[in-house]
Length: 373
Image (cartoon, rainbow, N blue to C red):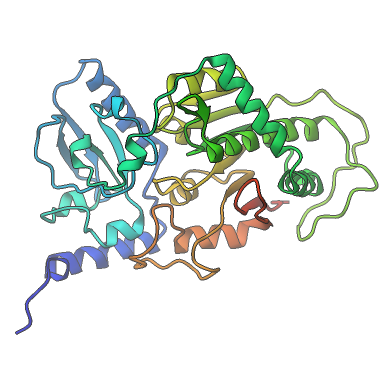
């Protein structure tokens, strides 16, 4: 008789079958109530208003106890790369998000625990991290002033605004402005830390430049009428606005969430109208009036967004699957992988418009929600 592998026991096979059935029924794995409950418990624990236990509700409705002790042995193995989280924050508990693919291939726990296997989010201490990407953890600490970092970010924004990508994005948004009227805020995930020693991270600086320009573009589009000379949308449903009067620019609120931010990053961004939020507060800001910006996060943002809201616009890095639909058992998928539920949402409810790569940033996709009328 062939030896049974740990991932092929009757218990695990039954679990996978049940979880897949729950997913295919459309049961949301992430809800705002669930996120709020975790946030409130973790906050209470951090300030000493709660004992050393928190309780997470799994997808079966069971209360799963978590001991909040950094020295407590855990079954979890978090092997994601750090993506820049700095060492001085490594004493705090953090949220560990699990995609549907990770849950169906539970190699992130040892031994297998049936109750915990149904958790889409766990709360861990850094001892659970198995990361070998040490480069990210030892990045240079900031050694520059708020004023200097602001100047460097301004330079990145000026570079971005002369790029072909900026022109293409502006054209895409302008051509589809009739679908953007409900956009009231931007929520950005994983744009990365800005400050690096005495300089700025190139990619992070450029992604924040995109964020700031996007805020400006949306405000400008809200205040000016369509021009008769504007190109028609490439593929869309709905009717263009016939308004011809200029209005006061809409104030576009802007939020950003990345555990890698330093205090100086948050201060510089605050001065430019961007409020930095702690995990999972940015997810709680998501609604149907949101524009989402996300680049290579180490949490399954695509899947979380699909459960929580239908944003007006979603801007994110290109899929890594060459256009193939994502499966539930794609064990080689990356952290922010798509899924059948995400693919169905994006195909049926959004217009997909690519922004090609150039010397400034890698290519990315702009998804604009179709008209519902």
